[in-house]
Every structure is written in structure tokens, then in C-alpha cells.
Length: 159
View 1 (spheres, rainbow, N blue to C red):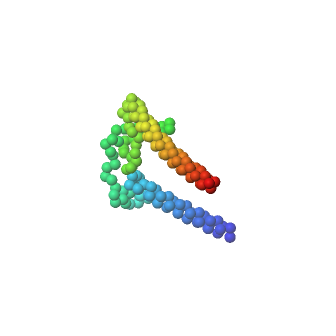
View 2 (cartoon, helix red, strand yellow):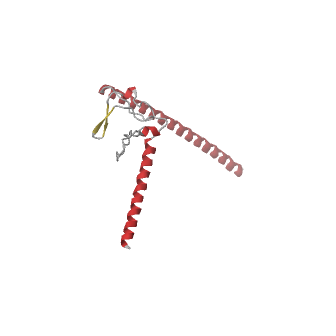
View 3 (cartoon, one colour):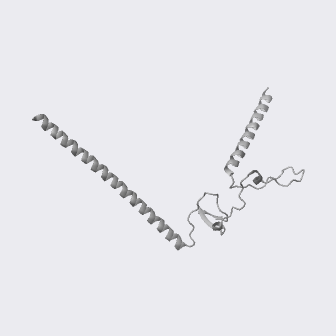
């Protein structure tokens, strides 16, 4: 009885693992989209010599060339403590950081970006101050009008 239960548990576990593996494959397919092409699938048994099946055959809109001119030269990006060498363009819609040619240009780019950010912030601050002033003026005007009316009403009641 216990052996049968163990066997059944093993079968259930095996089925669960199989389902998880299939689910993971589906997720990878969804993630991959048209940007990632894994290596060709090879027949593990090798009983019959078959031409390796390409995964790109499954996709209809597979781009023929994914190398952009601006990404042909090796570019080094620092990520943490490692440098990554890029020789191909990233996925469509992915924006790389501005690429300076030299350290001097990098500093110039950084200064330009910083100045533009400061200008945008100053403009936003001025706009907020203008709106705040308008709101205060409107409140003050309404308060004066209310006070004037209440004084006249009070005087009217007295006389």
C-alpha cells in the first residue's frame, strides 16, 4: 500500500515538473518575440541524421538583419563591475544611452543634459509660483468681497 502511494506521488511529481517545464518554454517563447533566436535544436538521439530545425522558421516576421550601422563598432557599456562589449543593435524600441566618442564629449553631453534639466525645472517652478499667486489673489479678492458684503449687511441691519 505504501509502495503504491509512493509510486503515485512520484508520478504526480513528474507530471507537475513536466507541466512547469512546458509552461516555462511558453513563457520563454512569449518573451523571446522576434528579438531573440536561440541556437538550433538538435536531435538528441541522433538515430537519423536530420537537418537541425531552426526556431526562426516558426516566426513569420523575422528580421533579416538586426545589425544597425551605429552599433557595428564594439561599444563598451559599464554594468556594475563588468564591461559588456556590444557588437549588435539592441531590440527595436530599446534606447541606448548617448554614446560619446571621447571623455571630453562625454563631459560636454553631461553638462548639456544637466543645463537642460535645470532649465526645465526652473520653468516648472515659475509656472507653479504663477499659479499659486493667481490662486492667492483670487482667494484674497473673494475674501475682500465677502467682507465688504458682510459689513454692508451688518450696517444695513443696524440702520
